[in-house]
Length: 198
Image (cartoon, rainbow, N blue to C red; front, side, top):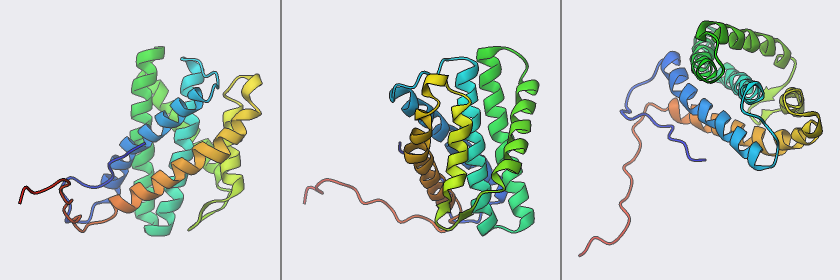
């Protein structure tokens, strides 16, 4: 999956809220891509509550990963602003999609998502994350949560899919995206490919 993670107009430092807004767009694509990959790997994830259950759990995981990265790079105040903005933006996107396809109000859906974020924040707090990324228990917990979402016949197999494939790919993309979004310096111009005709 290719993602664009540089500012269109570089050259100034972005606020935590601006970075969170940009990451939210990328995070949704990462979660959607993980869902597509998992379905392509022959896991039965039905459109409906199961589909949105998968997306919610994966987005919670991305929010927790992002918060741990912010812990390394931002002040406590900026980290709180960043994580709060990210969670709210993703909750809005999630609620818009869920209410459109499942019914119910966006406000109710958003509140359920935020409640889920708060619950998972307390649970993931027990697991380690350092400059090398999440420890095994961090990704193992995502796998456990996903085993509660999928059908019983897939619950054992989903653990390996999450730990070996989807979680590492997501962490790598979030780490890279946040590094790129935090850069204020302009990127060097791309070289044009092909011959010049001279």
